[in-house]
Image 1 (cartoon, one colour):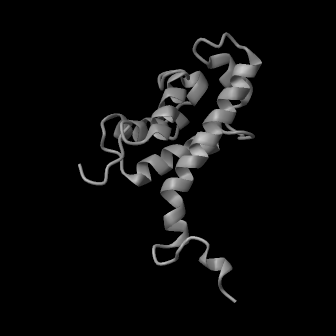
Image 2 (cartoon, rainbow, N blue to C red):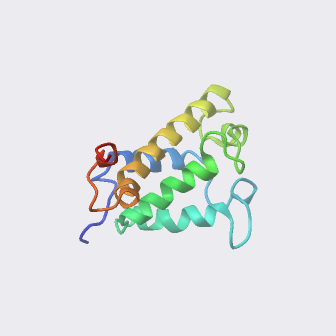
Length: 134
């Protein structure tokens, strides 16, 4: 498909998916929550597009924003402690949870900047042009 983003053509996206794979699956409602507005359902919708090579920039952007909002440093939804306890293979080691949160936050922020910044700035505005005005 044209203009789609795949794991093969975006290493940061592939890395973020690898990080998410270390967390419990969407069926673990004790981690992701329950009901139609559960955090896991939001992730699943965007991950489905990514994993089937049908992701557009907005899908990647939303996935990255979900990571920042629900899993990133200082979020009020899924705490670093919950992440630490749930990480596959980390055996509850606090440093692993801390490193996961930092890595996921940094990777998600990279993706948000890649796929959102042009829209925030506007397509007709060159990078840094606000500093040239006035």
